Length: 253
Image (cartoon, rainbow, N blue to C red; front, side):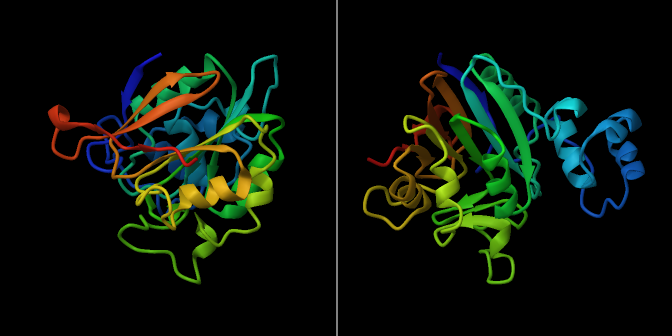
């Protein structure tokens, strides 16, 4: 379909229209009203974590859809977004347009995750997946969920569970729940860095699951959805400006 949606100005950097105040430190649902979340939304959400509620609201997910999934005749898709996103890269109006695009072709469930355990549970409770999107700031071997950008501050032994990395052997069986012809999109920078033969997350996911994997070999700025079913997309890098963009997509064989 060729729809191109800009999702960042430098490695998924912050965009206009995102929440202007930091979500960190929210202690109760009442605090959400300060960040523009209606009290009725917070009360109706089947979620106790106030930061996650803020994230769902930023993506325009109806409160009734949080923790729920409606399965029709469309193929199923699961999009997992990180709770940790200091620059609000994944919570912009353009990201909402991407989700709207996906809903045209899929029964789409959106989950905000802070840990690898959240990812496993989301996959386990969403049936017959044709498409899985794992979004988060990334490095060659990591996607962060509830930790800082790993390209700046790598995961440690203490917070390794707050991201997805090469050592997550408990996750691979869950990823194999996808349909055999399913696709895993790593919506993140650098997880395909080095390409074929490199020790990167894209190659590890492909090797562990046998599913088609789409990843980025560079710091990326935008996602171009080429088709919905079967899913195909390109990750675009424009580090030198909009007139010097390159296709940074890496698809392991």
